[in-house]
Length: 263
Image 1 (cartoon, helix red, strand yellow):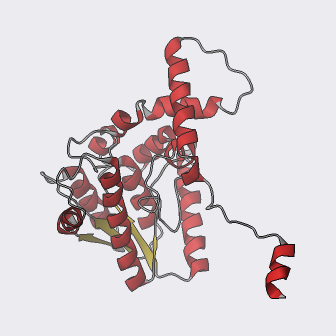
Image 2 (cartoon, one colour; image 1 turned 90 degrees about the vertical axis):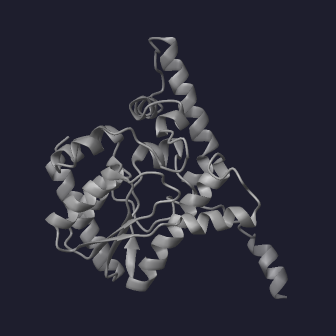
């Protein structure tokens, strides 16, 4: 993959999109992960005002990877601004309202955290007339649906959603993203036990990427049992999260029924 050409293409695409939308800049939530780090760098390269927003929730320790990336961006780009908003009080208040004591050990509350972050991003986006930038990759967004509906899936545009994780790693290397970020285990940061994406998915991104590619083939001869298990895991996740990857269904009313209403 010719990473420099792809980087140039994405930056050009971002510029065209923002000109067309008549927006003033971009806003992006960062986590210290490779996807948000690469995306925030690409957005910064447009030279449009870019707000980097960090939104910790009940974090017990400082996110040093996120801090390191912020320092890297703000030093390199004059158009980048950083804001940190701790959403812990907002989340704990919600837990009290629904009388939930065990705050971070359920999927529904993990999704709530993601949606609070989306609300915060759009609050600042609306104030400044900015576009909210998504950080999902192709496997997450179109393979297994590993994102929260109306949470981290609630964005205005997806710059890296046509790139596999392996391709994003190559771009991260080209952009000189911090080595620690490149090698860190991917995590959504929504769980108290700090489980990784791989723990939740039951497979690595490389394995899911492989499974996603072979779904396009009419026939594939599995070389071992593990390959079969990974492919089955991909199929289950893909089917389960299909509703996230499709447009919201609209009940189309037959024209003859509409005519009846107008009579």
